[in-house]
Image (tube, rainbow, N blue to C red; front, side, top):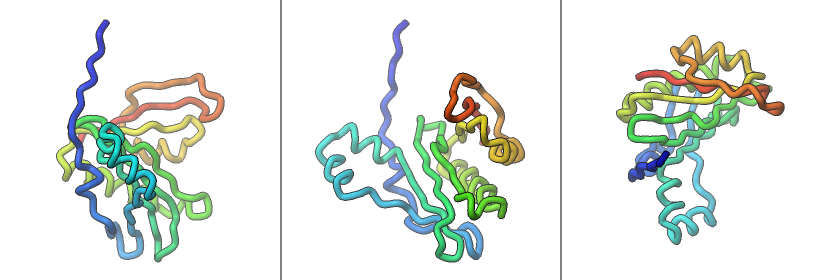
Length: 157
């Protein structure tokens, strides 16, 4: 069996806004690449392309950092939420759900057909939110002691 890797030139990170207001108090601030990452990206074409396809935001509520969300462009059709986290101190206040609603709108407005993510088995609250927002299970990996298994989920936009 031969696998082909389709390469594409992404501009996900380059075109992203620096600050995004989700609600009156909930804001996303784009995370900047460290100097060394920028320098290596200039020297190594492959790293530069992967940096363009990766986007990271910190989540703020009234200027207090409460979490983060990271994206990776899997293909021209699919945007993957690599990581979404609301710090335990701020969980249960609806921040994750608001950020996910924004992520769905963001992916749709960028022309993606799918938004995907992985949810650990030890995160039933997160899975509940994903199901509520229309994500469907596409696969599962049960044998993981650290995460309690992983479930792959995808939403058609």
